[in-house]
Amino acid sequence: MNGNSMKWYYVLRGLIALLFGIAAIIWPAVVLEFLVYFFGFFAIIVSAFALVAGAAAPELAGGSRWPIILLSIIGILIGIFTLVFPAQFTALIVIIIALWAIVTGIGDFIAAFAPAGMGTRLLLVLLGIVSVIFGAVLLFYPLLGAVTIIWVLGIYAVIFGILGIIYGFTSGSGGAASATA
Image (tube, rainbow, N blue to C red):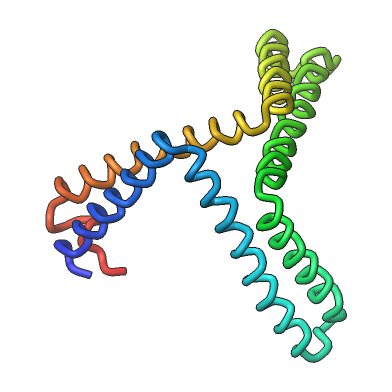
């Protein structure tokens, strides 16, 4: 690609990200629903391809094709579950994030009092408390947590988009923007 087409690549990528980010901020529930359904179809399609490949493949070197077939079936079932129960799938993902945050927070809190001296104890205590509170809020309000995650994604996409657009319009014809792909 020459420098001029690379400029337009960054501008178009930035515009798409900017529009997605604005949509995510304005309509987080719609974007969340789209992403959940997209994942459901993605899981089914990718797992179906893996199932066909696993079933058609001869015995794999060093192992059997049955783990691939089994994991493919599980992937298809996860995709179907996602499409049939999208709200429950969304809540489940947020609950997993919440549990991870709580476990991490408890671990940080414990590390703060470890005899080996894990650095500044106060910071680890605060980190543990913030993580546990964050996890608890997500546990008690999972759909609100999902919408908040979409807002954060939207803010990121807006910033990413604006920076990409600026880079596309301000980059010269030489340098990194004109490197061939």
